[in-house]
Length: 94
Image 1: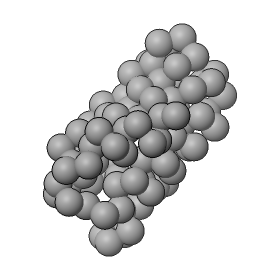
Image 2 (image 1 turned 180 degrees about the horizontal axis):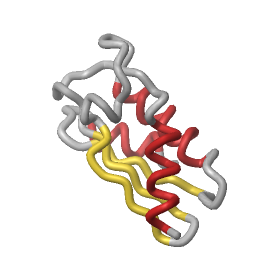
Image 3 (image 1 turned 135 degrees about the horizontal axis):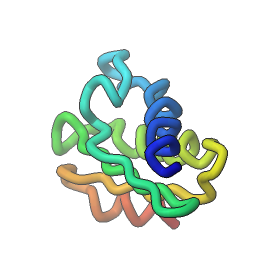
Image 4 (image 1 turned 90 degrees about the vertical axis):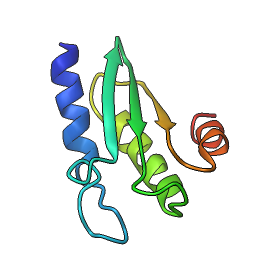
């Protein structure tokens, strides 16, 4: 069941495009990992550069899209490899 949810989440966030490249965040490799435990998902995002100004919007969109998947109540977004990762993660996952 969780593998199916992982695929559903991947499909849901795949519609999010990097605003600078116009390419899916999944296809660009920004989505590093998706895990599901019960009704909770965790998505690890790694921007293409450590100063990416769009990662906060991408993370917020990924959270909304993941939480719209049937069977997922909450999604935790973890941004790695960004100069402001800690602050972004705290803001997105309040």
